[in-house]
Image (cartoon, rainbow, N blue to C red; front, side):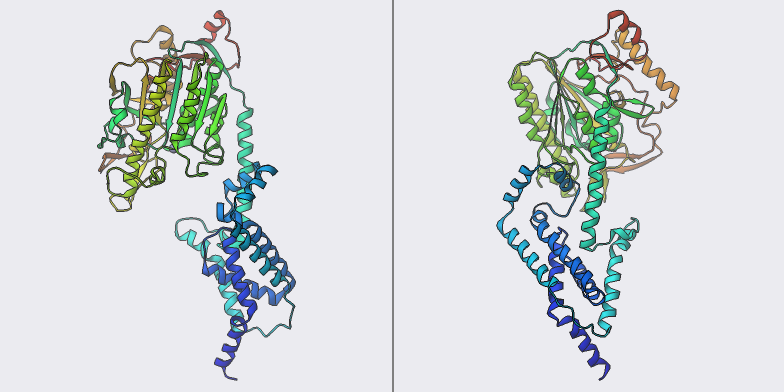
Length: 572
Ligand SMILES: [Zn+2]
């Protein structure tokens, strides 16, 4: 027999066997059923693995294939709805009860179950294969071995080439990935749940010494990823924020965010900070609670997750908390910021005697911007994503207008604050695919809008003086400070002087780049700890830290402890 004929026969041994066909079909189905994108490479490689293991240890192969067929059949309906295992599906698994899960089974379409049944049936057939005498190791087997082992390294090598790390566990075999994804995400869910429990256990240390709210309702709207220069009202090139451009109130034109990412920025803005570390129990919600406010937090961001838990823990201190999303910020992608307005409408629907603090946490302009606007935009600028980004500003502006109208109609005095947690930076600049993403190397990552609209404002005012997010909580009014306010401000100032970090964000710029939206500075140090006097709103709570107390201390005592340090949100 010549070599060519032998090869052909050997090839036939694998290609023509009906078992090989069944293995290939089952490999494809397992790939799809576990929720991973269709891949011919991995289907062929897995067929090779099944073929080789059958030769070496038929019983092991039957167990492996039987198990995967069962898992794939069971998971198929889920994968069609939720994809491969991820943080949110694992979280859902942890938090669902029997009733909810039975309900879920009824929402999957009937044909999903039909395919699942088919996968299971193929598995049964494969498991019933009778062992036959093993044929000689041929060229096909060698090829199969090389191919399946080589395929194992494809993804890790690709990761390395894209600037990542080479890790064998990152192999792309769906069967392997599924197990890894379940374990990794399950551990993450457990970690985050534990982290959340830790945050919840910490007791706040505020002692409120005086409460003098100027208005009845305080609303704080926390925006997301909004650059100041993308908003017309704050000097942006496009007239995309008609409400903010004309409304009576104060617009701050030089407010600097505390960081370039949500968690870090809001961590430093909304909490008391000691040695650069946020004290999550001492945040503005626990402060308002202590001061006798009724507190509400409505959010379109994640309520648990690597990038969500810390800020969500602040939210969960409020008397009433509502999250539109059930998992992290990527869960339930279609939730809209405007849905939060239904919740505020409900709050305003009834008369409340207690002063109110309502927080809205928006998804705002978070990448991808076109996801936020459902691909809609007004003016085309450079790329679709950039255009959508500009339109997210219009959406947020319109949300603020509706909220402002709700507040006006409520009849109560109010103060509405809006600011963004950080800006974004351009990527692929000047190209058709230009987009905006998180960064911390540019001024624009920190230049965000900040505005305060109060029920008694009579004019549209632009404040040019610089304000820092670091002073959101411990702020002092500018100029007309009373004795007590001056004291608090002086304390913070002297602390900062001691730290010796009073550098201006703009003065330390070493390298400028010219962009379509003005000059961009490449710089390191951004936040100026010496910038005081953030004129927030009429909300004024004087408090000291160190002792948690529900009741305001006696007058004498209050006077004494006030000298140890003051944190308050000051009036204009
Ligand atoms: Zn953010």
